[in-house]
Image (tube, rainbow, N blue to C red; front, side, top):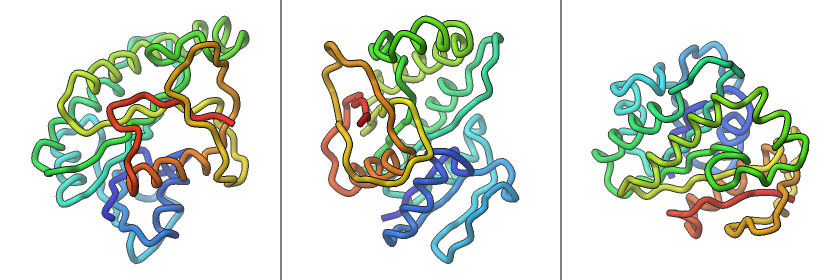
Length: 209
């Protein structure tokens, strides 16, 4: 499978690139700075660009089977648009690639998962530190849901650098749920499994232990 990863130099994105290569997939990583990619592999292609550049996305998605967006942004009190505008660019580029699948990693607290992160996260961290970020992630999710693309919105719980376990819960009903932790490697595993055997597309699953 040919997979494009946007946001590939750290966190979930880097874990996904590494795991995809280990499992024999071909990976295209869209990067602003190629020097930040710590991996080298015969099946890894570096595409220099930015999610806010429509032409960059078109180039990175050409001929691909799947794309995963795992971009991040530093907390800021200023309004953001990188998530929502980036989603628009990805969706536009997908129109030229038949049957391509998209998994967009947002996070607990986006959309209707708000209020399910636990007291500290819901009452302090998100409203005080991540307010503008999650306002834009809400817009991102709305853009994706309104599209005809083959999308999935993935909301991991609290991300850790723990080891791969392959054992986690996939929840589509948030009733009475408080998200727990999940390792970045297990998030990467779920993404690859869904690209290989789709089950949760057009849905917004929560991933947690």
